[in-house]
Image (cartoon, rainbow, N blue to C red; front, side, top):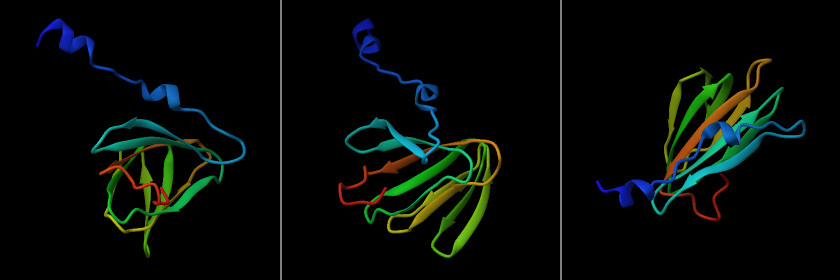
Length: 119
């Protein structure tokens, strides 16, 4: 790899997106490419996000900090830091902060959700 190749690599610090709102869960796109999309979700108190669904994208939800309740269809799980769940295309996902501490999540979908998706 030459210096020109290394200089073209653009990185982003996830911590720059960790911000909370008193009104609602915050979610902001982290990275977006032709074949992959990701966002950081920040929740505090009883905040939640969803239901979300995309018929054409599989997604992975990763808890970066805190504890959340995740519901997919009729299934429900309590997730702690570093736990993940696969959200198959077409499944509806709802997440809610499940503790007094704030929660930070990473949601990654491939291919990127369509504009009509409810993610």
